[in-house]
Amino acid sequence: MAGGGKRKWADVPPGQDSPLNHAVSARDRASLDMVAAAIRHREVLLAFQPVVRADRPNIPAFYEGLIRVMDDTGRVIPAKDFIDAVEVTELGRKIDCLALEMGLRTLEREPGIRLSINMSARSIGYPRWMQALKQGLRRDPTLGERLILEITERSAMQVPELVTRFMADLQSHGVTFALDDFGAGYTSFAYLRDFYFDIIKIDGQFIRGVHADPDNQVLTRALVAVARQFDMFTVAESVESGADAAWLAANGVDCLQGYHFGAPAMRAPWDAAAYRRRETG
Image (tube, rainbow, N blue to C red; front, side, top):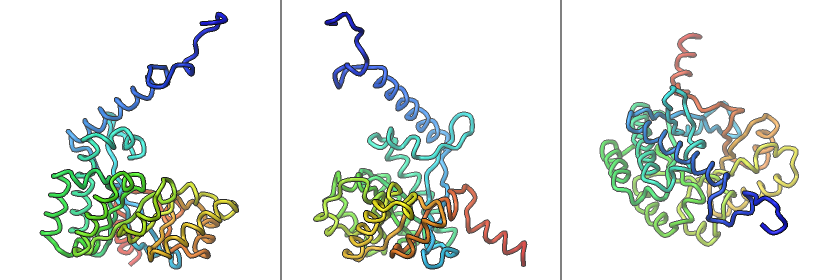
């Protein structure tokens, strides 16, 4: 190079290999291999996290079923560690299928709960996923009234017309739709008006420490105002302290979700509650 200096990896033009690009690619390949092996061996499961009412936090409004896979050492790996790598691949569609199938079976076994399941908008056009949904609703038409499908803001905005048609078709079955990670992406308010979302889940970046953060307080109030304008229910994600929970309840958020109320658990919370009742009864 001119001046005799060494060429740094940061100087490599975009699209060319660099130590950083190589590391990211290697990590993504490892994630893809891990998820593929977990699917092949059926080592995929749901963890359940309560979403509670802000005015009565001891009462779960519903539970979120969060996909998990097990690696070859038996460790349970949360979706955040692999979902970006598999999202645009067929493995992402298979993960969505397994999550939906397990969620529908859970609803069949537990008629007293409502359950949300995450999905990518890409799965709407995936035949196995649509078949699993239709078969589940045919087996028990009441499942639709207790099923919540969560679609991330980023995913919904990639194919908004497809999403709106899909949601309109399922309205007759009573299925509820939640817009996940609201505020983290670039939702067009024109599309938000046209979507059929019933619930908006406010992204955790605005919620953590909100009771002492004036900037996030303004942003959270604005997101709540948008939800009210479009007659949507609000859920605050990543609620990790009592002070945040109190601020959110006082500022009109309908429901709260986060470690302050319960971490995702492999043992279903409703089973644990029944066990406690037996022990104290």
